[in-house]
Image 1 (cartoon, rainbow, N blue to C red):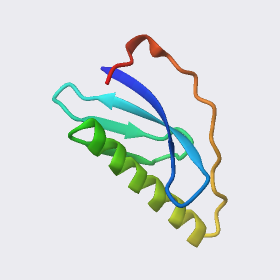
Image 2: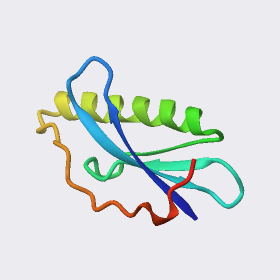
Image 3: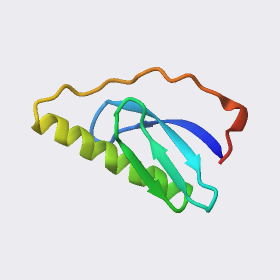
Amino acid sequence: MLYSYRRIIVPDTLLRYTVIMEKNEDGGYTVTVPSLPGCISEGSTWDEALAEIKEAISGYLEVAKKLGRPIPVEVSVPMNYANVER
């Protein structure tokens, strides 16, 4: 498994979150957001996976606002670049 770490800016906000992209053995990517528990998405290509996780993050934040929950801030994630590949 190969991992990649990227920081993305959430559209229409000033928030930035680190995402972890994992290349799946059978193709495609699974993306998680350590600062947003349960926020996960997939895409068959790198660009699709990034687009999908941005949408998932926006949805996560929208629901948190509607429920009156605090908006999570970035959590520091230790980076291991040994297996990073696009």
